[in-house]
Image (cartoon, rainbow, N blue to C red; front, side, top):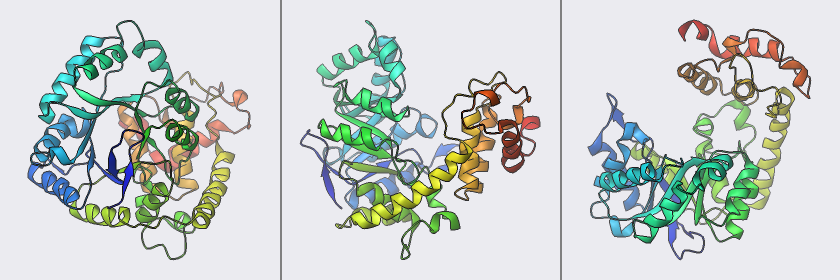
Length: 374
């Protein structure tokens, strides 16, 4: 296993981290013995960073991770996330106390604000009774060591959050399909922060090789997930890439990849970046995600729908796109099926995309009856 500096903390963490968000389940509950076996195998192979969160695996992940830590606590860096980023410090602290109990530890190593954005930070977290103040108090009490945040906002806001100087590390997305956070990652590294990457295999998209994706990779690529992980780890600004591993085979394969001393060559990286950039240009012809068309008066997430359609049309990821699209049925009126053809969106589009027609195409390809099911 390769180990890297966790920013300027002095910690050395494994290049591969264990993401405890996809622990094996049966009948809606974690199979604890199987999950602990998988986690322990990762530890045996040198993984010393494990990441979980309050809501993972139906609120059961932290409890299972806590049991898996028995006998390993002093050898493993433990990361978890608090979902509360409100102006209610008491609520935030109550969640922290609960997490300490579930993990059965007296201190968390890396403690995150879960999935924050710039507006939440500026308007809620930094308020007089906000959770940032509560976090500093808890840190002073020794309940966690390093303050972090996970991120799903616009790339430019990653740089803004990094530049607040409030955080020791960040966990964010970065992969072959989505490299938008690259400048923020570089800025975080420059400021001495640890950088942990989630979704190195594109949230599973690169785990399902299609002809369209395969042609973008080096000819001798044996495994798409392997090359995707190696691409992320070849970025010198990255401390660790976490993978949600649910079985022993995934652990063995990912640990073998993260144990390779040689990164992808700059030539290999450049070739893949160029190939994927060409695909992105094709996707941008359909929609750049500028969101000028929003909000839709009927609740349709127009850019979101087109993003899924691009996954299918540009990268051939039909199964992934359909699964995501159908999953939106739990969020009322987001799919293309709810378009009422009012026409408000089309004059706002700088690319003059025929939005109504494209939404119809999206529903036909990915939905087929979604509105009735909702």
